[in-house]
Amino acid sequence: MTTGKQLFTTLDAGGALTVEIAEASFPEPTGNQVLVKMEAAPINPSDLAILTSAADFDNAEYSHGKVVAQMPEPFLSGQKGRHGQRLPAGNEGAGTVIATGDSDMAKALMGQRVACVPGNAFSQYAIADAMMCLPLGDHSSEVGASSFVNPMTALAFVETAKMEGHDAIIHLAAASNLGQMLNKICLEDGMKLVNIVRKQEHVDQLKALGAEHVVNSSDDDYMAQLRAAIAATGAFLGFDPIGGGQASDGVLKAMEQVAASQMNEFSRYGSNQDKKMYMYGRLDLGPTILTPSYGLQWSIAGFLLTPFLAKAGMETVVRLRTRVQQNLTTTFASHYKAKVNLEEMLTKEAIQDYRQMKTGEKYLVTPHS
Image 1: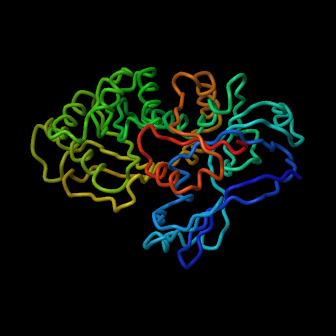
Image 2: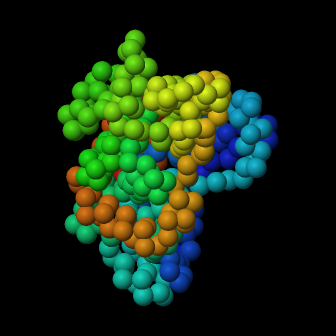
Image 3: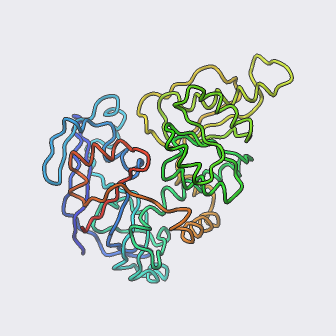
């Protein structure tokens, strides 16, 4: 039995969200499991859903290795299923395999540095499935820490587009780490991409990476820019990490305006053009606002990586993982604003910073530092 520090998060029925570092025991791995000494783990937006959610950390109670914040409604009731449960956090990370189960696949990883998806990566140790481990070779854990969630999600967007018969994509908040990866993938695969950002510096950043279509939503002529980009690419499929507000609404509206302009005659039902937005995040926790301005041929769906991988099948998963492994320091390179240990990630300064999920300002947790 191995012991070490691990982060836990608990939401009680009264609204108190407790995030704390505690001593935990890790069992010996069995079967296809491996025990990984975790050396680096990124704080992704998907982690914040359970780590901080919408709790009030401005007025929280802070102590060494522990913070207690109040969860407001409707988020408290909306998370009723987790009330009273002490949950681990941290989707992905990287480290060194120090023990294995008895399967050949697990044994082959002994002593290797791997990227993994244990679901409790904010921990000094973690049990992971060998099938979901990516050997990093000579790469450091820092280089490999973000090799699953963002790279595989970006690749999944392109795979989804191809599966649904599209050759162009629209992406919001496109200057993020994931957005930069998606831009590189689309250039490599010949997939046309419309990037939507909010700042001129992000326009310049993506243009420098070779992006052809970059639209600034802060410009007065944003909708005109967006319509021109959609007309040039034929992009009627989008991916939105914002979720709340009218980000997707604006894209659907522009899609319909382009489609309607290409119709030979008016229809009260709008164009026959399929228009679809996938929401894969909630950077904005407010309500999603939709307006009756894009006919009846449209849809919005949620997008989650795990169900996509199950649907895509093992052959596709292996192909995508191999591509990530071969391009860790180029197409799929990640960058971090700051590195913190487990206790430092629970300081008021750190939480208030990384929960804002600002573009290009990701944190990396180093559990043993």
